[in-house]
Length: 220
Ligand SMILES: Cc1cc2nc3c(=O)[nH]c(=O)nc-3n(C[C@H](O)[C@H](O)[C@H](O)COP(=O)(O)O)c2cc1C
View 1 (tube, helix red, strand yellow):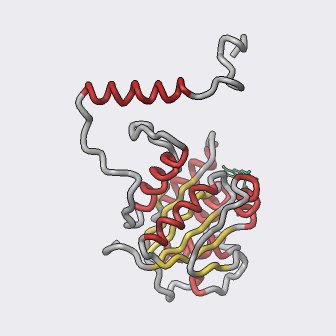
View 2 (tube, rainbow, N blue to C red):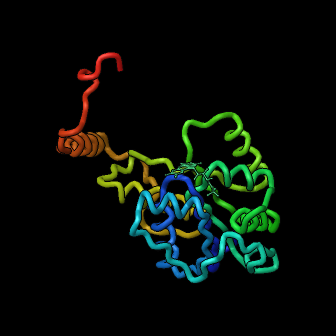
């Protein structure tokens, strides 16, 4: 992909991780990218449960059912697409090319036009069908980028974890935002030990009420 993208399609499907979609849209907007948004009905339901106050900001919001929208055609110039979070249902539809809604159609168009498509697939554990769909999606040109936390970055909050995941995912479509600074090599052991100690202290500082220890639950 040449240069930073100017127009990006953002698909939000019904996997858990509404915060990831909200943050991705915020960061794309801050980077001056024109955002074309498609939110599935299941994503709206998940959002209502996880983040009822969430707003999805975009320059253009498309109807999930509008398979006649601009972005349903390869002739409409778009630089890249990201699906964040991506359910295994949407992954399967993209892998098999069954474009029965605009989100999957836009992803299919992205692939046929040989544009960058990033799928932040979120499910665990995974059965063989999920894994096969990931292989197929990769074979036809998508990038599978599951939203997995990185602990080496020493996150201090859930926001740090979200920022790191989103920044890494956006970097795959050529949008470079703060939140995931490049790894500069392993820090000196003393500094590393200090960082680890700080992390442990933070964990120990958390209130213990409501937490259950393994010892208190025989058999676990
Ligand atoms: C609260 C909630 C969390 C969910 N989390 C996941 C998930 O992490 N991964 C997944 O594949 N599906 C998850 N689902 C199920 C999907 O929403 C469901 O399969 C839906 O049909 C996906 O449709 P879509 O891909 O068109 O958005 C979740 C559903 C709800 C209500």
